[in-house]
Image 1 (cartoon, rainbow over the protein chains, first blue to last red):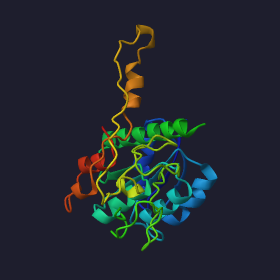
Image 2: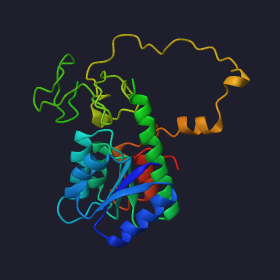
Image 3: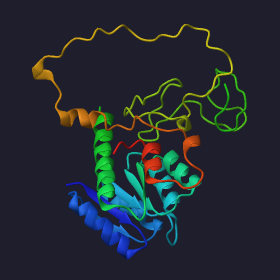
Length: 130
Length: 123
């Protein structure tokens, strides 16, 4: 069963994401409300997917994603945010973020994005295997 | 060649920009494999390389050598037993091969469709 970590400062959004990810067969291994915990949670759980909000107390989601993907390029990160700032979007793409989901999101669209991200993560692992 | 970082003109033999130190050898963002400058796909994981990886940097001198298009491929019908299933084909083509250039991302009013195209997701 694929595993996921949800990082969002809104408890309501965390519940929503948990429901969506559970519906597609994902096990939520951890949740956090700030970007400061992302690296530690990734190292501890090595999840197949991380959802990251951008505007959060402490470290913002873009910084957390850039730092995580710099050290763990195989991590699969999906940004879940209402922010449509061009610079933020391009910074995420440049860092190697898998996808960028806009809030408020349609649950079915979110399911598709998460499934795609998980499949892409699997493909990357298979392709990079010797 | 023009440095993608600071736009300085550099000798094509250089591996790093003389002004800003940008590495001209494209390193895959996904698996960190060091690719050749003209590679379009990563040799380590197969991911598509984009301009921000450092590949496809603009050349200032015209290409003098003939362009090798590739060997002639004869298409033959595959035996039925080796035919790929729809699931296999869908997995194969789910790779992020469709990417729009950064300049095509709207400055305002970015939609989910724009983001799907930018991140190469065909939903």
